Length: 287
Image 1 (cartoon, rainbow, N blue to C red):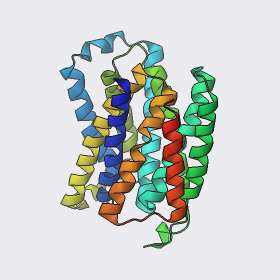
Image 2 (cartoon, helix red, strand yellow):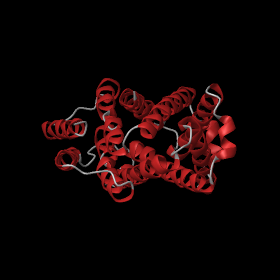
Image 3 (cartoon, rainbow, N blue to C red):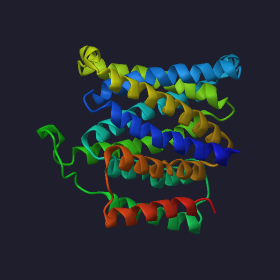
Image 4 (cartoon, one colour):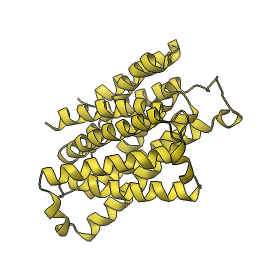
């Protein structure tokens, strides 16, 4: 069952990237992140009450609270970096770097969760690493001076680092805890963090200027994120992190397919080969 949930998480995560990209063409990425987090929070707490998990909050231990909060902070940092990278760069270039968090996650799972690293996993890491390298290209088209250079690359790399920390901290934080409740608590932490960044950067006044169409896409992105999270953390609770995380990263196929249809972004032969290696390495994780 956890494998099916992991694949469902990948599907919704792929849709999240496309919907978010549609919602940040003119809207500040930090503001968009803060708004969509509200949607995710509402969605996640509805699920908590649907499954009757709200009573379990009184039994949450101090250690679990610490790891849930740390996981939420890591998630918030990953989101802020990821959507800034999406705003500055092409989806086909940003997403592969973000998905490379699989490599660091496997390493951290080995060090802290004592999950075994087999020869196949070692080969998978190499394939994913090489594939990611092949897909990294400098963004050629620029619209403003701010969007030039490789700023998107820095944000994408930071997103991957924080995403891997999120997986490990989340795995520890939901041991013995209902996954829906854990997701809801973490989302509350992300919400606080996201709005602190909005007010710190003095972008709160731009909320009134968000186009209606972009606001809709931001909300839809939040719903897709909520669905992805609920599937992901339930799968993470029941299955090994070193397998669940790679499956979730297959969302890259959904994202790239939709980026071609919606944004007409095409892969070069080199990037296409990189995608094949990433997917091959990810699938190899399942054996």
